[in-house]
Amino acid sequence: MSQTSTVSPDAVGDPAASSRRWWTLSTVALAQLMVVLDATVVNIALPSAQADLGFSNGDRQWIVTAYSLAFGSLLLLGGRLSDLMGRKRTFIIGLVGFAAASALGGAATSFGMLVGARALQGVFGALLAPTALAVLTTTFTIPKERARAFGVFGAIAGAGGAIGLLLGGVLTEHLNWRWNLYINVIIAVVAVIGALVFVGQVARTGPRPRLDIPGTVLVSGAIFGLVYGFSNAETDGWGSALTWGMLTASVVLLAAFVTWQRRAAHPLLPLAIVLDRNRGAAYSSVLIAGAGMFGIFLFVTYYMQTSLHYSPIQTGLSFLPMIAMLITAAQLSTNIFVPRFGAKIMVPFGMTLAAIGMVYLTNLDLSSTYAGNILPPLMILGFGMGSIMPASFQAATAGVDRQFAGVASAMVNTSQQVGGSIGTALLNTLAATAAVDYLASHQGSASAAAEAAVHSYSVAYWWGAGFFAFGAVMSALLFRGRPGPVVEQVGLPTSVSLQADPVVAH
Image (cartoon, rainbow, N blue to C red):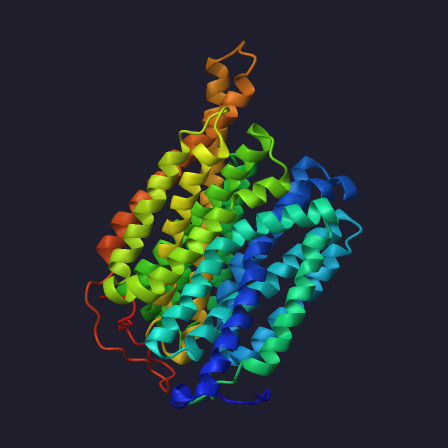
């Protein structure tokens, strides 16, 4: 269990090696939780941070945007660096860097210092997130164990946002907003110890490939433009020249990136990875689920706090049953349903449940109760997300050459991040327009403002249901019904297996 130990598939029958793998999963799960919850844990702390540091409402969005911009635009680079530098080394660097950035943000004395720390968190998060998933991909080679590991990982990816809301409420109310950042230092210290002891090295075979600098610049610029464009639309509206300028630049850079990848000697993202039918379906499913999931957290949180006047802790606790259903579904899915039915059944099933849950949420009004009106759709949504994520995560990384495990994993995180940015901006814009239209047609009503807010959330839920319904049809059509044989290329530096894992598609 030394730092230089090497993990070999030949050791899969060794009980000690098996125990070590589950400890590796625990370590990776901690790191994934830290990255995912950081997207929401800071949101609840924002009002307190704003009062403490004295920044304006207009500047407030940058506390969130700085993280998402750095994180989203550098994910593919982070994934490729983990392929080139080694999973264990990259994982530890990501943990230490994320902890240091979090400590800096917790100690911030000015708005600029806090924004800089959040951007730095995003940089190291982009290194850490794909590496964590790649560690799982190369550690768990037995199909049944791999399914369980991805079930845990998928559950954390789905539940992390809700956990962040709960944790943010507790820390903000009982300590102060700075502990929403300091908590990462504690998590990271435990994860670093776990990484040093349990995460093994995977021996490199073949020559060391070089980093694709032009490809890195092009795709990072494309994702930056995409995330910034949608974030700007959320604040400045769709009439903003900057919004459309950024989105146009993103499309141009993405086209240039694809063209370059076709001819690059050492491509950052071999196109065979994303053009594989199962992986393409998995990335698209994660993107759609990310868009819908962020919408759930955003609008249900607003509804409970502003319309029903729940405290931050009450709001966080309200999501616990959803988390419980998500974890339950993830375990049932990976241990029973995915091996039997495959992603072609489970992902559309999860999308359909999520769409039903979103439609259910459209019935909420100012007199709704938690037990009668909020709890049932949250539980349905939780079960739906728990059915989507593990199957999609397995399909997205199945059969990939070990040397490209990092960048294939990064595409999963990129899909979720981009989906979240697109979903949040689109749903927020649609909700804001609905609220304005409602107020214009209900002038003079004493309760018009409160009713307009609830109406706007309902419009967002309907659109969210549309996202999931589209995802159900898309995933049913795209996922393969029958797998080919599993081929995991280990020693070929320029080839990527296009076969699906039988755990994923049946």
